[in-house]
Length: 332
Image (cartoon, rainbow, N blue to C red; front, side, top):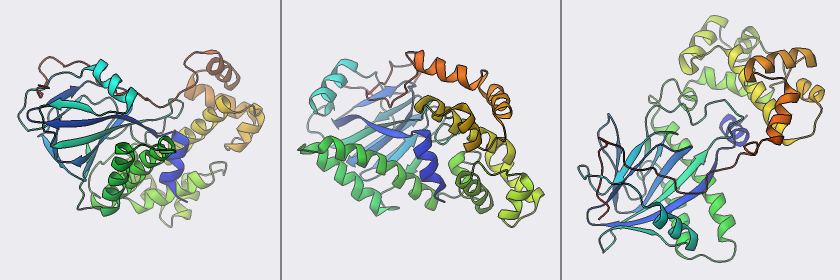
């Protein structure tokens, strides 16, 4: 069971191209919090990532860094540059005609591709939202990631027939490759996050069981048996990795699956309840109401009649204004 692929698919962690940056001289942007995770990929030169409370992080050509959703941060040409805010109109124009957003002064020595990843709001399993610190993968750590960056840069530099479809696929591939590289090279980081939990083989195997057969009547005992550990060991390591019990995680994932099916299909509630592991519609309705605050049928109606009921990826580059007291670069 490829747990990562399955969770990314259900959670809707799809990417969208934010903007391409070409910068030289003294430059930088302070990006206020915005929905979704931001993946900054440096295709040429060097960029510095600024996050409050942490040392500036140097990101070189071929490197990529993932910033958790809602994290205000800055990107700059140096470690001690005074940052300003993004010119939203210029960014929108650049995105509209496929050009890069120019920063600083000529000649451009750094090129950065900014990508956005948003998770489906109906899915509460925190694949990307629980990240506590930026995740950095260097070109030296993963040559495959570097080649994918080169492919994306080439598509952007010379658009042709099929480029939009190619870019969409490459953007999603980048996230998978990035996470794969990070898990392989940084096993001791990001404790308490969903991705960090993948480093514990016991928890990873238990998650694989849950995701392969969410409809199965799993208990902590049967999950422990399936992963060849004691009930106490599974409970302890699961809580340490994810901050919740195996039973709580199973319920959360079942409700996530049900929420997406209620929104996206016309399946009867009775069919959905059985498909996600509940023995009766009444038991499912009770669990769903506890998790979402409303009955399944009412939930479906609300999503389909609300203007906000159809989520989608962020397609715009949406940095906010500079924040008082924030470190930051000058755009001049």
